[in-house]
Length: 274
Ligand SMILES: Nc1ncnc2c1ncn2[C@@H]1O[C@H](COP(=O)(O)OP(=O)(O)OP(=O)(O)O)[C@@H](O)[C@H]1O
Ligand SMILES: [Mg+2]
Image 1 (tube, rainbow, N blue to C red):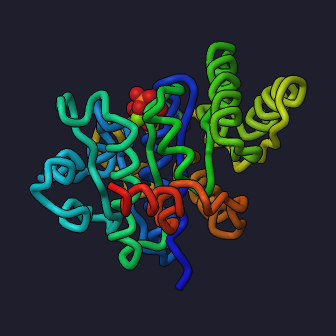
Image 2: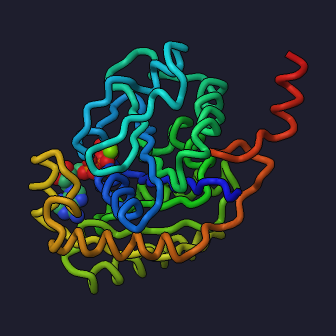
């Protein structure tokens, strides 16, 4: 059986559109026939459930406290996308240890049969919680917008992820571009910087235009591809989902801890010795 694929959606700078892209890409993949889950890995300030319009009565904090299993934490949204919610201002999910994060990642194996694809919506930046969840994914998408501060932060984020995880390929989505042509230019400018200083290869997965309909959809607590399917942002996101479906993620190191990957030998050995 093929194991589910995990895709991280991350960024250097906050507020660039990760959560909206995560939820809408998940819905687009679901509509293409996949069983999809969104994991809100922005654990302390979780809000993906709001964009998906669902009210989870359980969060990852309940799994950690042992009051429910991972499978019981899943909530199915009205759109058919499943959700594993993070907490919001919950002390239990702030400042997690490395071991707890690894426990969360390994806990997803329980859901292997229920999912074809997991979209992991991370927090912004390069804190260890972001790095660990990103490293555990097969595909990594970095969201960039065409502002100098976002370029600097996205560059820093890719540099740290490359150094810490050895990953060389990153997919890029340019968000909030004035037009698709501008998106190509923004990507080229950004790639020129990484090409100069880093040994990484960037793949332009697509551009999502700046679209007031997306803001309106957020106001209605609905994914834009559901409330405004003909809007420019919805069409762009559907195209990107198709690219995700039709391309393989890079090969990952099966010896590292990851979502749905077999437990690495060193972890198994440590568990036996404990
Ligand atoms: N393509 C777009 N067009 C117009 N507005 C957008 C677009 N993408 C995002 N936005 C606006 O940016 C806001 C922030 O988006 P979102 O919450 O998805 O960002 P984020 O990267 O997840 O933020 P955080 O780093 O805080 O988690 C949205 O509520 C929306 O108003
Ligand atoms: Mg977010």
